Length: 252
Ligand code: PGA
Image (cartoon, rainbow, N blue to C red; front, side, top):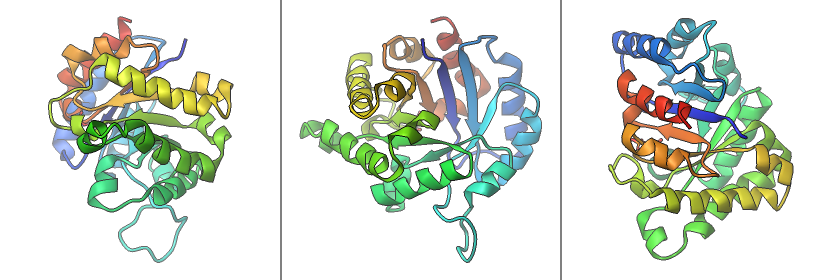
């Protein structure tokens, strides 16, 4: 049985005092479960402080984005090795907000994925369709394009160190969640694509669901056979809300 990862994507939210309170709450209320791991992904400026607060505990640290470059004249960018240096184990790549607001193509995402792996980070690769694409029955095509760009660039073995997050764009921050069945269909498809290259890697791969996951819908989603956790935006900003999802996971 695969483990469950509950990851908080704080996006561009928080401040020093609020983060300290949030992290203290998460540490205090984290379920004692062998199977469920927790991860928080704060904005860059707070990574070191949150890393210190998490030190020695079971909650992991990740970043929300990373440069595809190692070092040098890239004003405003953050290198993968810097994230390691600040205590990160994970980094989100290809979030739909990065793709749509900052024009990140699947090729750029693939290079970030590889750069993260090279530095010893676990990339969390986000894929997902817009409402228009779903209504045009193009969900699988879109997910295939986003996934295959990375498989071609990094190779399937790289997915042994990675996590995939299926995040239907129409469900992100909208309060509309994919139904467990809708999400499961796409998760099974993603696992099938990976299995077409390497069944063992597919079997071990964690595929998270993201898009308005909350305490009251988490159990239904997480009980699906191919949903191995959540990438949580809004509900990761309050310890109580995040822990409600973690508690639902621990009860499975
Ligand atoms: P949401 O965001 O939980 O607020 O919908 C999820 C995400 O964008 O990762």
